[in-house]
Length: 152
Image (cartoon, rainbow, N blue to C red; front, top):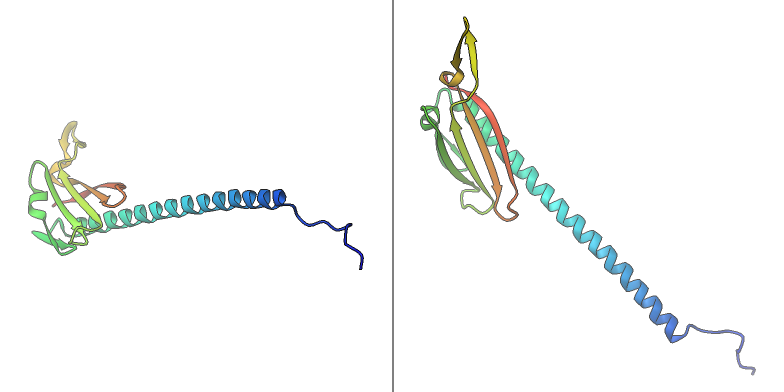
């Protein structure tokens, strides 16, 4: 039988170079996937913060005119304090064990005014400026929503 001299296999250097190239490609793909996963998580956290802020704001706007207090996430929000002159700050957590969001609710008199017969009057007798800030406790992301709510 004749030896196969015309066929060659891969040398050790070729195998090592291929393995190194494959390792670099796998590392690059892993880094991209990890970065994408992290960005996706941040977007999800922000979406939850936005939805929480909107829910809190809508509940306050719905009940501020006629209720003395409401319960959000099992915690009381004093609406009488929000309607009174000056400013007010209240804080709750969602869920109520404080594991995900810190919700800061501020109310104050609006700075805007309107003119009646050339005289400027504050709209503070009719509206309160409500600011809801939601902070995601794990990521530190925050979202602030401002709106005017009718008090009369």
